[in-house]
Length: 524
Image 1 (cartoon, helix red, strand yellow):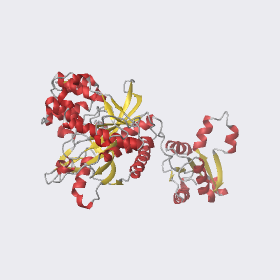
Image 2 (cartoon, one colour):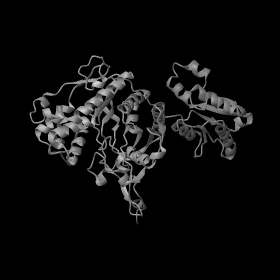
Image 3 (cartoon, helix red, strand yellow):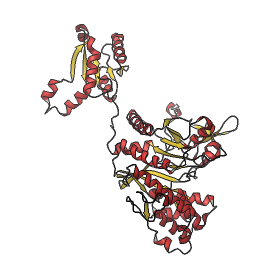
């Protein structure tokens, strides 16, 4: 006799993806609204692009190339053109701007949020689908546009309840690292330079020793997978790592001499740095790095950005220069930034670790130029919504129970379902979330259902209440408190009982008063 159960499809979720319940969705919605408020305060307007684009339009800029299609989910349309799920929100924006260039006001300032998809090897904290919230300024070449992104990122962290000292916006300039790579012999070696950038971008996650392997011959991870390295020799690696470890200090006085940018002389702001010994000692690369044009242009832009943010009142406890910030995406051309959370949490083994990056961005002056003949400068910042939500939950800034559920009208007598439906409709028409219990079972299961739904109260009407023209309202929030504090709060409970009767004609007012007492939407 065959076992029919063996023919059933096994319910299973693909690796690297996650289901989300009402509490997380509610918390995400609240967080998105706070981010949106900050972005709109800076003058950005909403926009949206589809999740699917032509593959050649998205381009190949991802930092990981150890997966099919270089980290992108792709498929072929019936006209044999390749389509891909977007891997970020910036590449689709570049297409939109190029396609609508003449109709858009420039600079074009917009924000958007949505799901993005990466065909990456899943792991702890690495998902194939995640949400981003971006803001971009297109058509502004000034470093002031980059400085504004950093200031907005800092304001967003604080709007979400992340206090100063628990976050820092780190800033670097790709031109600094480009100059170093030119000086150590990687000029024109595009593939090798990209491997270097992607290795350095893993510095926080893997640490210096593992990154050193990726800059050299390569690295084998814990699973045994081998990643081929950039093939640099020891002196190239040592000089490169020395640049990343440069200690940058900020000088807020007006007396910085000589300034990196003479045009800004006698103004506050500025950066100071000491040339590492590994560079000074390097007869092979030292002088080439210090005198490199791109390296010094990057320093001048950082100097100017520092001036702008300090002039606006942002200190180095909010925005700091760090030469270790790289950003893995290929299309960055100038300043790059990263929102880093500095408080400690625990990894999967229980060891204390810093929470790390929850967003980043930078200048990408060449991305839109792929579609147009003239240069189009652009800069932007992207927040990893899911990761940032985990951070604010860790700090206790999010209600883990989520928003209150609906008022549940119970069914005491199935023959009177129409009467109960009338009550539900009256509540809904008054703007109160309400539902009729549609399951089976007596009053006990119905109350358990309401409790699981996080309902603030239930409405009960049996035959006796109907005869009196009344309903019973059971306050589930007050009832839970009373159960916890019954030994010390007897008088309080008697003064405001958890279950009480009201006239049926006063049902809406009574429920509204109850919601107002608990600060729930739908009250007065």
